[in-house]
Length: 452
Image (tube, rainbow, N blue to C red; front, side, top):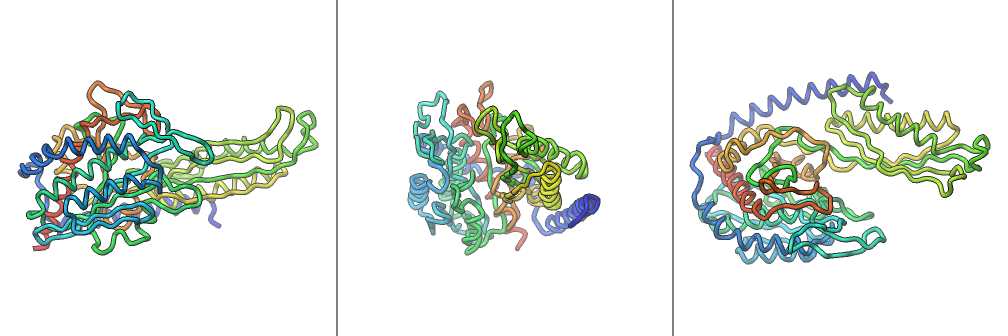
């Protein structure tokens, strides 16, 4: 087992190695790829087709929003998606992938590479409180409780945008230089307990094979950005997401006689405080990490010291070595505190979604497209966040480009993601369609040119 000093040296060395390797990879990739000019002419047919399909797509968005479905239960949403792709004359439409996922293959009339685009379909167990006429009133049973269901994270926007892109590209397939694989993913928010799902399961089932894309694109609506703007983070963009459960066991006793028991509440309190020293004292100060305890359960009565306290929380990191160090240090802290207090502990540490890394070379290559479509002044350079996104599983396999789509009308408001008053305006949909369609077209054209 490594000491703290050894862990810190390993983290720092790995970061330096990764930075050097990334720089070499970027130079190599750019050397072999046709650049995209920020002033390149935009295909007028894209805007014409977006104008033609946007009303239909917005109606689909409203329907999906009004009838949301939780992860691995997106049966009706998946059926709507598959029917739409078939109606467009897609070459292949596959369903039932990773439970409810849908994949459509659109082959262009010209030879060229394969590129993928992904949208997530699932909703959240959140009761909607928006003023929309098409707000969700759906209720279901989740973890044994009756809850409302809503698209409180914008996945209805994502599906609608991708259906719009499918409609536009199908309308110009004769001049499409390559193949586009459309991936509609279930359970981005996580599958139900005891089930697998999401991007990890889609990758395991071979969604990035036959045909294999050379890059993948995705987007996420953003409640802190106005319609017409897009945001991008080069390199590390979203954090790895881990989930831990802890049981601290003591000895029950009367609250008036604590010396006859072993108090797990005291030990749990010490552990919560000590976890915060991992970031401040055990890791290099420029390496981002978060340890959050979100649930503490213990005790049944005010005058009884309980036998056990349970805690749950999340760890967010970017660097894989930091991820290792945090998990190891949490175990060491729990072992020391419970040994000193006379108790024991159980730590269940579940590694979830890895960090989402925007491929630096692909980002440099494609950012001019976004600038051309929405205007350079409307492309926002976003800082990395400690939120998570399982698009990472796709981007770990092939170069990925993941951007944010503004969703709030100027002067309007929206609640935060995962809240009852989360609002994404319909006017974001055509902006997203134009942006993603042009990204895919420019990628295919430049990749084809580079291979000639």
